[in-house]
Image (cartoon, rainbow, N blue to C red; front, side, top):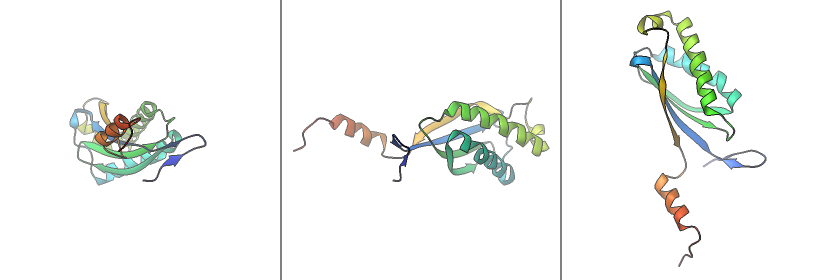
Length: 134
């Protein structure tokens, strides 16, 4: 496992993000997904975020990324959703016809921490601290 670091800390912060198109409209194909990924890669360095994996279905995208401890993920998500919505609708006019009103992304999203040891292993490790081993 490769850890990230800076002058005062060592960290590994990986996240699985799922963003869904408003009303689950089916707007993603290979071309629109690729453009959404390019927008993510353009914005993410400003927030100390690195894309690790990207994939899509017709109505949502799955994103695996890593972040810095000082990253404000909610601000990044707002910036990304705003920019990608505006640019995708501008560059792919057919998308506007599939959407109801002007909203591209659902307000909701799923963000899961990932990487490292499974939760139960970490929990057992913490519970065992301070105990003498035989």
